[in-house]
Length: 276
Image (cartoon, one colour):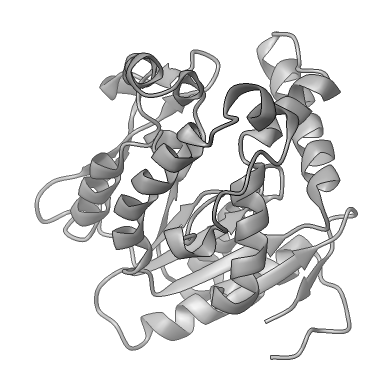
């Protein structure tokens, strides 16, 4: 599909995605598994909730939203990896820092939710940097018609990553000069690909550049700080944080231009264009 000439609001873009999901649901009895990716601060969570709302209101289809962020390994598990593998493993985010087995189990359980009891969906407490107690997990009673998994790296594969030729930013130059941390993460990505391959639809939100990621994440950081009362990371801190993901983010942008079923390009004013 050629790139649309007219830009859309976030709600209009969500309506377009919801219509595609509804069309797929007409021919399948099992839940539609949809992936939604995009860099930090790209608007994934807002888009995911808009899609779910539209599926319910306009297509009478229930939708369960899962965030890849809620499947991070516990603080203790990442601390152990930091000691045994590489210190950067303590920072949540890159492939290898998620509990992929728990994610697979949750997706499988949602396929039979209701008949075998409700499905418990984990919740990660980012302020505590740890998984919330099971008593605080979200319970889904009935099998949804759509399961929407949103996460910044959803859909990316090992083959999408260029080979290591040296550090690409200050973080890597200082803490991963030989690429050991990246090599560990890349190996871990293989386990995620089994989930990506089962997806019926992948939608991607592309933003103009890494500076947009930093600006968006900085706004998000101030919002989180205001809501929690904690101090916000400054620009230097956010830039450093984004560098953990930079190698994957650039690879994601390149790969999704041919791999995404729906590619939405978002500008700095949060207007969208359908690219493919």
